[in-house]
Image 1 (cartoon, one colour):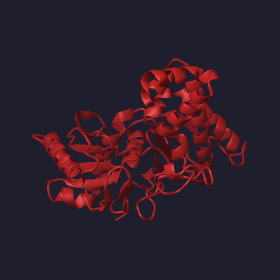
Image 2 (cartoon, rainbow, N blue to C red; image 1 turned 120 degrees about the horizontal axis):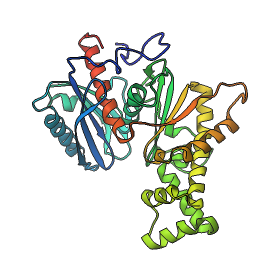
Image 3 (spheres, rainbow, N blue to C red; image 1 turned 180 degrees about the vertical axis):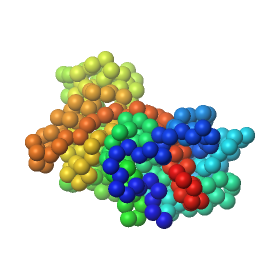
Image 4 (cartoon, rainbow, N blue to C red; image 1 turned 120 degrees about the vertical axis):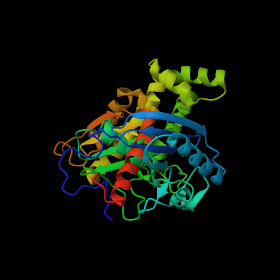
Length: 345
């Protein structure tokens, strides 16, 4: 079956999937499995969250995660009309959106996750990559409204990616496409958790921002406030660095600028391949807004092939923030459930 999220000949914002809200709305459930927490929500056809839950992730216990997902779906569905549930998981998902090939922070290797959930839940189930789910939510209900081609980078502990082209999610031949965090930007660069070296995840993630902030603190000068924060708290974390960025501290802002320049270089290479109309940035680091986007734009223009002749995309911060994963997972589940039973989307 063709991917119901891919619309042939699409040349504008589609009416009929995410933007039209039926007067007889049937809800879907979205579950977003993260390294530290599992978030769940009951979501309307218009993308509004009706109810939500969060529990801690027992990352080392695969069965406990499945049990938690089943319990969460059952609680969210109780007494309500629900047509499908979507589960967004970090890692590589197969083309049938059933099996988790590999996820770095959870002990899943070729895990038949959809099969396990179908055995315990009386709902249509769809499994998707977490960045795909977040990207689809932004395309359908957030910053990507009004465009047909969008690339999203989710800047968290790592770097996630989602590609929407001609109105449909790009998944690749085996289903594991759009892993943009593993685009190599530095030959023989820093080792990455994926086994390669020099991935953008090592230069454009929240973890990379902390490394850069520590390096600036070590030098002194503009890094004095970072060094003071490190002495007081024992180590720098995202909250400390983010707080200093918000106050305009020059050392913390310099670290963010370095991060933005790496991301801008990556976007320039992605433009040569994907040619999106819009780049959207989500994740915790994206709350910095233009402090992040300004160096991204600058580096993009410096490194863009055919500079001066290639149309430039827009750069925006994600709108749905922490809700994107559950909203996207729910909407994708709804679309796929209707395609499987031959109902209109």
